[in-house]
Length: 506
Image (cartoon, rainbow, N blue to C red):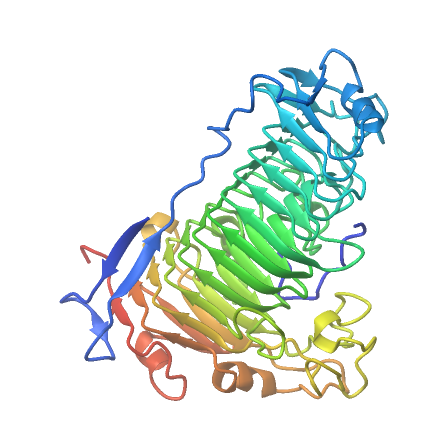
């Protein structure tokens, strides 16, 4: 995974309510444990049950013939902006040139008839590119394109305002989708793509107003890029870079190689809610060097079995978790719908470990241990380099750290049955910790300063949760493994109002 080590370079291119109450076999530090209402998220089955497009061409639409190679691209070139194209049933092809692609004009719409497929035949790199705004793609299957690493097949150039709905984007190399400003991806199947289902990255600036809703995102990173380039941090069901405002809701994100959802570097103002995140090889969710998020009403189950076990088998003591916050926290000085990271009303069941809050003491702006980018983005806006020692300008005055702070974890249900996970140790952790600062020699964050801060001073709180199973807790550093009594006691005082009990039948 590589996510607690050095940061990677940026890409080269651009409802059922369950009431949880106390039972006779619980242990609790509160005389009045609070019931916890947890919403079980529905599953978005978009790949096995795709919606069908119009069987006839809408009035005024241009009909595209699958028997004519390149017909879609040619008719797009010859038509004015705001044209609707209807693709007949069948397998549509582009010209047999690796760079052949459809270049929409502003406001163009592409509708697939039942059975309409745009097939790159492992020859063409891109399906839809260019910079036209407000393009719509509906009811279309896009497959067999061979985009290079870090590049995408649909919306290759991250144009703004695109809407992708009721579509299937499968079995492509690179990313199935790129994202632009105000992009909406709804009720679609992103399946079996070589690197990402979607890579939300824009080379020319930030992305805002991104909506990812009701999709099935499954089996991506088929080409196993973390193995091919260890530590690249270049995979995930969906990867987000520098997205300022995103709603990720109602998706089924499952069976991806690596992480399910990964927000990495300079993201802000996310709402991640009502998703089912399950059976991903790595973490269900990573939120890294980013700010301000609400993570609620998600069902998170059977994640991190592959990567968590791999690190445990190596003897690694780090608590690799299913929800992993790395140098990320609430920051009221950055405009968002919340000034903290709030994680609540989620069900986490039989994952490899739970939630880890981590802050690397040696990772800060202009430190050699931070290799994220040439500048420090939101952290030191308007400043190319953080001075030595650290000095920053607005909005984070006199501070060059990405702080894991103001994280509020409450009213969740954490369930662990080790016989289901098939583990004996290191799969049962909840953690808030940092390393001992050592690098570089001029660092103002050496020693235990950061570990003390993240554990005791930065307003990171667990409370009013329900734990079922043999949970352990880590505070300060990997060597401090606590039982629930120590976790609730001084000096940590975590999980006030929470309940702890053995699995049913124990």
